[in-house]
Image (cartoon, rainbow, N blue to C red):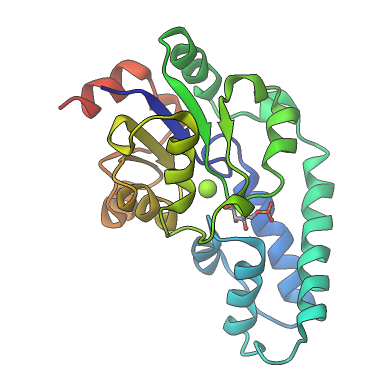
Length: 221
Ligand code: G6P
Ligand code: MG
């Protein structure tokens, strides 16, 4: 029986995935690293410092910066990203997500957030949806980031449900791997080919398709 739906944030609830991309691209370009959307896919769901490491490795500059300089680079990116976030209003929520949160609440299905973002609580506040969530896992609470299943398992633990009673929703391939390895039903938001390849059980190309009756039908099959 479905007891909880555990959401990723960036790229599932709102379009911050695009803002992460813009902020990383600007930083990468500033230090002479070429950066495109295809490479950006690899950063989705990945923590801030891991993302920086991947970018530096892409540019062959992994050894060029000290730990202190890396922290400065990551915080420069975050300052830019947080600046972009100031534009965020409740209408930035993706189509159908608010309705899904309402449906879940009305049907007693628990709601959790499993985002790698340390900015997640502030984003939920800006979107005015904090109250729907029974738990928001702080990424610092878990040892390993996505694609490890830790953050989804922690969300289930905090909601006191078993992983088999959960649906996880993700837009990143690392996130789909995390959900599947947690033993949950994985819904991918994105292109069918990419999400199926990552192991998603159900794929929607548009968040408007995320309707409780559809989720229940597929989950119970
Ligand atoms: C999410 C995004 C990643 C981002 C990570 C950390 O998982 O998909 O692109 O790097 O959160 O976000 P933060 O806001 O803490 O830098
Ligand atoms: Mg995401």
